[in-house]
Each structure stands twice: as C-alpha cells, then as structure tokens.
Length: 226
Image 1: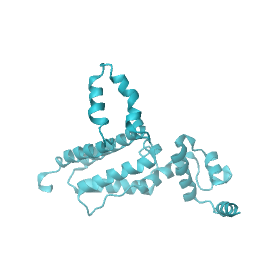
Image 2: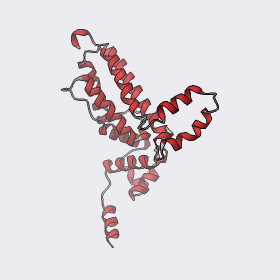
Image 3: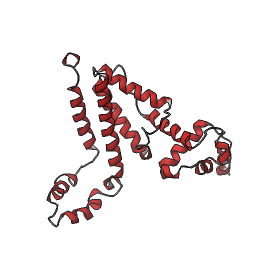
C-alpha cells in the first residue's frame, strides 16, 4: 500500500522544463546518450510523448538543456582567488563532473545555442585568465590547451578498463601475457614497475599533467604581473 501511495504521489508531480531535463540527464547517465529519445524520456516521466513538446521543442533543445545542466554543476572560478589555484579548482571540478556524466564529454562544446550556465562558466574562466595578465590571444590559447587536456583525460579515464571494480592485477593479467613474449619490453617495464605497483591510480596522472600546463602558462604572463 505504501508503495502504491508513493507511486501515486510521484505520478501527480507536474511536468516542468526542469523536471524533463533532469530526467533526461538521469537517462543518459544510466544508459548513455544514445538511449535518450522523446519516447524513452516520456516513458521515464510517465507521460505521453506529445506532452513533452510543451517544455522542449525537439531533441536538439533537450541536448542544449542537459549540457547546460552539466555546466551548472561545475564550480566557477572565483574572481577573488589566485588565477592558478582557481584554474586548478575549475579543472578538478570539470573532471569530477564528467566522471558522473561521461556521455557529456563529447557534447560540452558542441552546442550552438549555449545556455546561461554554459555562458557563465566560459565567461568566468576567460575572466580569470585575463586577470592573470594574459593577452586576449594568449587567453584563447590557454583556454584551448586546458580544455583539450581536461576533456581528453576525462575521455581516456572513462574508457580505461582499469577503472572498474575488478582488482587491477586481474584486469591487467591478459595484457601482461601479451607483453611477456619479449616483443614489447617497454610496455612490460611500464606495467610491472609502475601500473602494477601497490597504490597505483591512473587518476594521479591528472594532477601531474595539470601542474605542468599551469606552470607553462605562468611563463606566458609578464614578469611584472606574476
């Protein structure tokens, strides 16, 4: 009976644009962006497909909306903080959000009608780099470099077979057998002396690479502004 009441109450929750978009994010998180259709979204909401068109005009508007929701989860860099620490915090937040929404990695920069959260994010990031002392041109270079690294790392991290619940030794064992014939000595060395060491976490590579990039960007800033 309690379950029936709960379900009945949930069914009475009215549709809204926000509810439609948040359900779309949940569907994409669960089954991938390819599973997201008007029909599947309506079914998840317990509504008729035609009723969704009161809130979203088409699939493209849904994608615009859910990309903006993902951007809204990313921490904005603060105008009060030091540029380097703010870029580090922002990069870590992007990576963390994309680990929850791996389907979004290839979509974040794909929309031609970005929403307010997307625009706030880009403007705050550009502002932080400009306040650091970078020229407009160098700011463009810096932003492209940072996002190429962050998105690329998130994509690689999501695809690695080592990221599952199985112990890393169990996952790596078939690959080690391929290396052991002697044809791939450097791969064998990397696996046995680094990847299979206790405590190895591929995610640790993110901090190292990010620090290298931020250190390089600092050299682009005039000495009197550092």
